[in-house]
Length: 110
Length: 202
Image (cartoon, rainbow over all chains, first blue to last red; front, side, top):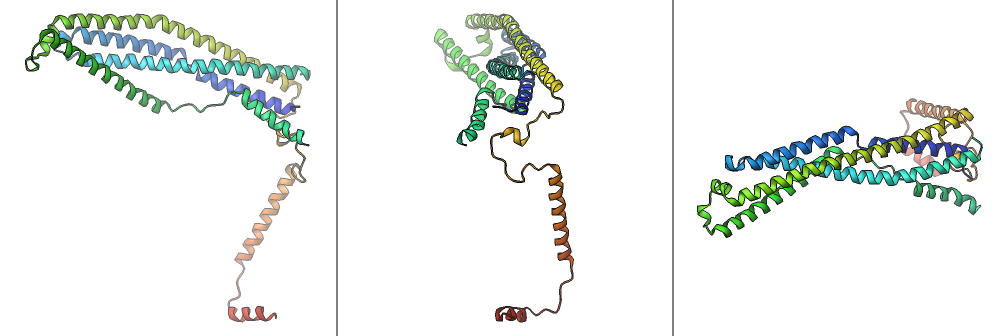
């Protein structure tokens, strides 16, 4: 039989965990930043390839910068997806924990 | 007795199993550095393989010796025009494909954030309700709450008055020690004589 104070402590720990997880979710500004980076990468790569013939291949260096941008964004997206999957799994556990605490509190007529 | 001891352990194990671990956030500088290194490795590998492929194709098609190779001629050749068109289409395709992908990602993130905030507000509401019902009880568990079934040890939960008494006792003992250390020592004590008197039993 868990005590009232321990139940409160669990609830508090759950609220802290939820706040931390909420802060870990990538903000919309990060997504916009990634979109801008993709656009820049595409433009740089295309320009590098298209002007390579006129400049004797010098613009391929710009192309490298563009490809680095694209890969950077893809890696960031993959990391965000992994984090999101982990947070999704954690959310189910948090839901379960909240349900158990709520049931216990309801049983004690709080 | 055994059951009493096992219950808190079981509860702790259960809570560990059910509640996800709090992970320390990764160092963003280190992560970004690692990512850039891996990206550079990727880009160099792709560039090298592309260069090798184009060289091989160029010499296989034209059958020229390497000494006669010129970049200007290579970039004017039909091979480069075909390859550049294909590359531009590929990059454009990536760019176009990214747009709906980013929408989808943003939407999924928004939904996840909303779910987390809903659950958080529910948990906060429950906490506030509990606080309103029992305002005098502390939120954090005391030592007794964490291990309610363990037998109480004598003198363990005697309250803050006892802590104050212990502290005053300790400070008195420290003062007495300091007084002893600061007291003037007898200068004219003969150690050999003192030892002799101790050994003779006087």
